[in-house]
Structure formats: C-alpha cells, structure tokens
Amino acid sequence: MHYHYVYNYKAKRGEGMERVKEAARLLAQEGESEQAKLLLLDAFSEQANLIVAHNLADYYKEHDQYEEAFHYALQAVAWQPKTYYPYALLGELSMRRGDNDSAQKWLEKAYKRFQSPVVAHNLATLYKAQQKYEQAARLFIKSYETEDYGLLHAVECLVLANDFQHAKKWIAIIEQEQERFIGEVELGELYGRIGDYQKSAVWYAKGYNHYAHTGEWIADYVWVLHQLGNEAQKKAVITAFMEQCKQTMADLADKTLEDDWTEEEVAEEEARLRANMERVNSAHLQHQIMMQNEPSIASRCYTFFCPMHDEGHGDSELDG
Image 1 (cartoon, helix red, strand yellow):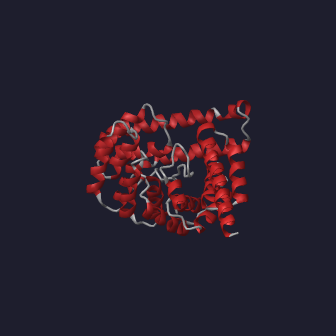
Image 2 (cartoon, one colour; image 1 turned 60 degrees about the vertical axis):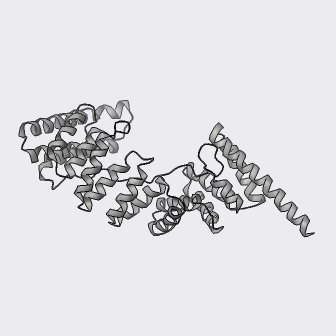
C-alpha cells in the first residue's frame, strides 16, 4: 500500500508539473493567458505545491491582480523555497501593498540567495526611503546591470549622502555610456545637483529643443541659469515657457468640444498650468535642483520554467 501511494504521488506530481511547464510555455511563446491560468488552477486544485502556487502568483501579478497574486505568493513562501524567486515576488507585492517592513524582509531573503538586479533596485528604493543612502547607492549600482536609470538613482543617493567625489565619478560614467544614454536633461539635473552649473546648463541646452517643456525641469534649468548669472538666457527660457502655457490654456476651450473634456477636467488642467507657470517664474528662489526621479517598483518575469526567463530555478526547486 505504501509503495502504491508513493507511485501515485509521484505520478500526480509529474502530471502537475507538465501542466505547469505547458502553462509557462503558453505564456512565453503564444500569449495564451486564459488557457495558462486554467492549467495552473487545475494543477493547484489537484495537488497544491510551491511551484504551482508561485506561478499562479506571478501570473496574477503580470495581470495587475495584486491581491490574488499576494494570496498565492504567501502560500508559496510557506513551503520554504530554496531559490530567490518566491521571496523576490512576495517582496515586490508587499511594496505594492505599502507594507515596506515585510517587503524588506522578503527582499533581503531573496538577495541573500541570488543578487538579482531587480531585487537590488527594490531594496535600494526601500533603503533610500529610510535615508540609508550609501547602502541604497550600492544596490542601485548593482541594478544598472538591467536598469538604465540605475546609475542616475545611485548618484542621487550619493549626493544625499554628501559623497560628491563618488557622485562625480558615476556621472562621468553615465556621460560616456553612449549605448545606454539616459538623456541630456537628466545629465543636466545631475550636474546641477553636484554644483557644476556650467556643465548642467550645457546639457539642459542640448535637451531644450527636443524635450517636452515641463514645469519640473524647466524650473531647474532656470535655477541653474540664475546661479550662472545668465539673465538673458534665463529670461528667454521663462518667456517661452509662459507663452507655451498661455497658448495651452487658450486651447482648453476646444477640449470640451473636440475631446469631450468635462468642465472639471478643464479646470484641473488650467490649475496645473498656472502652478507650473508660478513654479518657473519663481524658480530662482529654489535652494537646489529638485529631484524628479523617484524610482518606481521594479519587476520581471518570475515564472518557474519560463522558456525565456527562468535560469534553472524551477529545476532547482524540483530537485529539493
């Protein structure tokens, strides 16, 4: 009887894993989302285990159904996974729920198992919020392996830590990186934050003609020009921005007719434009460049047996 039970258990487990692998293939290669979900739910109802629970969590996460994802992710880590995938996913989902204490716990568990750039980014975001700027900078540098803005976030943390020597070093690397160039305005902001206003103004000027003129970075550009005493250019930038905003406000009446905007939406947009005009007009009163680049939550495919992304983690869990 015992051997018969073991045989049936292994047979069912094998059948369940085949469903899991087929679901992963469908998602990666054919985009058959609904069919993949049904295969996973069928496998889970027949024999719940870590891999099926985790892949269901990742499925729901990819479809922005975060509560369902969290439900299955909690079950997955209860099986004490050996690989980092389940801990990383539960950490990300905890961040999305605003539970940063739990998120940190799970992400640190994940990072000890595998130094993933995505996990590094999310941990760095938490450390930055705790004003642990040196730790955050190191992790953002790690995140640069897959995240183009990783070094930008690292520099901002180094500036906040008053480590201008290393900030300058990494800005120089960003400037030289042509294949992953982050943009002229972003470089203008970084140079402004370390007090190199001459280089900041040069980069802002390079981006001026092809970036959308938003109140955020235009105000910073005006502030830099004020530090340099370039009153003529400062006045020209302010005047152009004011004219742009006034023209946009004049066009708002057409929005109700052509784009079906409500009066409330028009009023909100007008208030936003006026706030931007005030911000740019008084930009010289700022104390420093305003930081616009708050990092968002990073994610990736964590599906076990995904033919495009899994790097043997599914097999590692099965071997246990």
